[in-house]
Length: 114
Image (tube, rainbow, N blue to C red; front, side, top):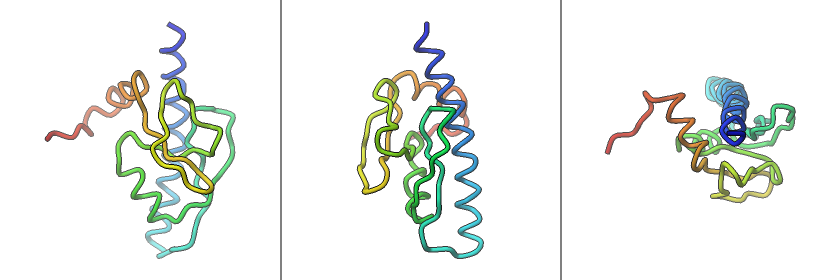
């Protein structure tokens, strides 16, 4: 199934970008940075190298939601996500369907019981 491959590839790319962004956010916390920092667009396109300026605290609040990712407007992928919040410079998307299941498979330990 081509879609399955797509969801899996997108998940891998997002994982890389998320790792980079988490390091930015951790550094900001250590150095008490409150201004916006360039976070990497967390879209599923491996070729994307764009960044978006977000205050670290705002980024941390977004990604506390397990299925939420930050993408540049126009980079959202309706096949695997839906837009839940629109900001001036970025969108917050929530993974749906196959992509959501992929996150569950990759991070089973993060299941929220309740």
